[in-house]
Image (cartoon, rainbow, N blue to C red; front, top):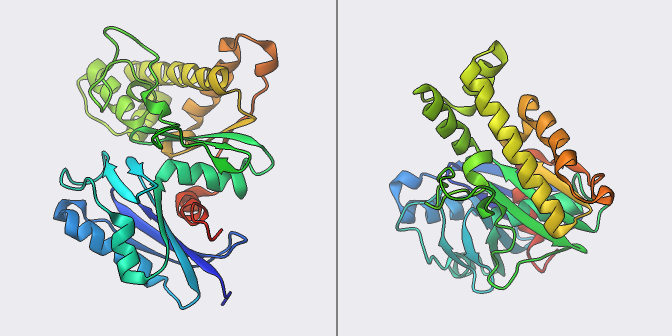
Length: 300
């Protein structure tokens, strides 16, 4: 067993993944627990602690936690987010774990962690400026510059899902505002668009299969999704001019959406020298946010 280990925890709305990680990014042990959000705040905290205990050893020197939502990383406080109970807000999660395990604890947004992991060990490891996006139920984002997270003034840099790509009567985002990228290019958007057109509630995989079978309404949803993703990717390139964009999440694995979305970016880029910006799928899979959580600690 290596003498210097950091525990990374990806605490999601459904599952908690934890792993003991070396400085070289090797995961030497891992565990998975249900989050049990329906059981409330105390249950979520208990399960995060159990996730850490499952991979704990005397060689652990720090703990990092990635969580979806708004995180005050300086204070180690989880502010609020979409995947946890309504009572799960302003939780001093770093202090709770420090008291339990007696090592330094850092907490950050899960997509910040995802982006940092892909920048250091994954699909973007040869690049200096990296934008990470996850296309799941919503759209999350992160920015890494010269190997370090760019957090902005309040750790909210990278909230690309709430970038506006449609005004006025645009689709409603999960946050309640209209026209946000997330309202057009996420799994929730896919379900909402299909329900609006067909009156049928279906999950993204079922809609994708229907489109492949020739269902006209499902094909229209896929077309709208790919156009929205192209617009969103192009906007990121225009605003940030990154070396590379790395994309994870379930929708990134869908060829019927991914290929036309990436191809459509080129026609939306104003300056020719920006048109060769690589847009690639993530390489680290379900372990990315857990690995990145270890990276946010000073121990790495």
